[in-house]
Length: 218
Image (cartoon, rainbow, N blue to C red):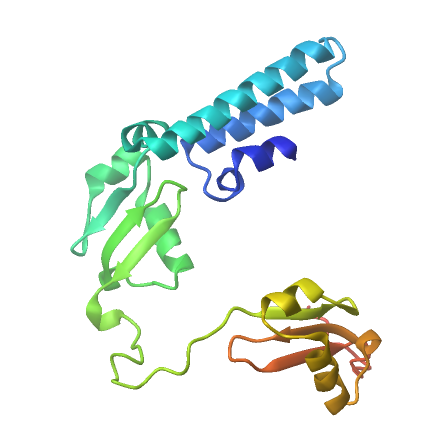
């Protein structure tokens, strides 16, 4: 846990070539520390610390140098350009048409003719830009004024406890929160979760939901 925190969150989210190798190697070394009694623990711990240092150094250097970042992590590859499938790039990536269609379907694209550009990112995910006629209409396209700026949700109560840090960060106060509770006839210990939403509205979820027969999906 400590080593993963030091190396960074990208180790578990993006999984580039470097991150993949680092994760596999660190897992193997950690597994040997836990279960391999034929090897000296000190040697394994030294290997773990050494490789962790190398992984951190490579990650740090990659941030500083774009050329080294491309070498260690690779670079995105175009697989569809101007609506045309780039078969040569697919072959280089060992990426079949079946896999390409599967990735598109996961993005709710069932007709490949809708795609203008498709790029296989460093983390193995497919990014897609649809042709203009297939893109979703936005408020700007309709010349409609957008609503007021949205705010990040602010959690006020969780598991029946007031989160003072969030209240202070949001420029609110306990007095304001208790006033909101009083207006709704609620006490803090009755509330499982309370959040101030992106539009400024308040949402309260109570421990007593008054749902006698919850629906179980089959």
